[in-house]
Length: 248
Length: 167
Image (cartoon, rainbow over the protein chains, first blue to last red):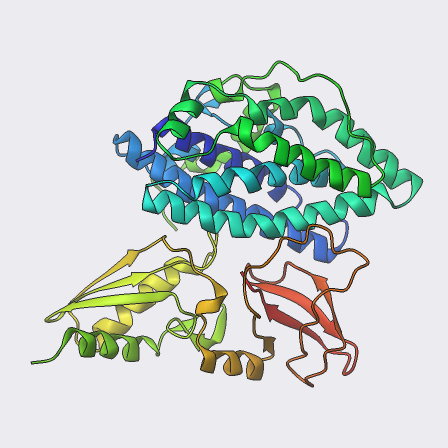
């Protein structure tokens, strides 16, 4: 079984990004897009539930996915800082989704080869869903980048703002290395050239300039978060915490 | 003496009564999510593989599977979720594809294949219209009313329709 800390990362990235994307529900720029973002969010929250269920099992303290999602505080979350940033405008949301889905594409391919049958199956399923997210977001990046002056400007601004946060995708630490050593994941350093090539291809089709700005100081994997995560959690957790144990 | 295979076949026959709550034209057996059953007297364990990670119908389906089997005399029903190998639309039974079409949902083509990252402006694989059969259709969105469907429109009969996604 993969270690608790590693499974939390898989679950938390998707839970927090799913929650952010779900904020668009009822606010999408067009009806089809409203439905698309809600669908993507649903997939991500579903994936999070499965990964967090495995995490709870690995921990062995009786916590299920709900306990982990609703009853941990900010510093106990292990998601990337990139996914907790506010949703911004539509260009920001889609550019982030593209960067994340492209990274997830290669990551999940590795996890799908885990010797843990449940983890491998869940990752393989998530990977299939992710292909839809990836294509959808990539097409939007191309559309916005090559669209009007306004859409191009917004897409480039989103990319410039997001880029320094992507350094965290490929930051390796002991938890990461242990997961790779046990066969639950492939190395992030090995995935990076593929990710670089994929995003460069799409940004060039989108007539966007890939930034060269250095990475930020990050620490989501260690529980250090931006000021935005706490507020997101407050909204996500308020109902469960106000009515502990409620069922409906 | 009834063989294990015959017992399993009986369970599959009963589960033909349980319809997919989101696409009530086909059963959970048609959908290919019932992967097997082990019968021990009046006790049964059914192995089910979910379609989409976030499919809200999963819990309803599990409950309805248990209810159907109890209606047919089983006293103890366990529904076990199996994640590996993951479900694919290729598991949808052949005869169910016709049922989908008759219901107004274009059945899925073969899953897998290359990841065409950006299809904008290029030709997309035309999904035949479930109403008039024309291939003069285009995709409106890869995301539809449920996780498993995309939205298309037919230019021949001017009918919008849904397509069960290949995944």
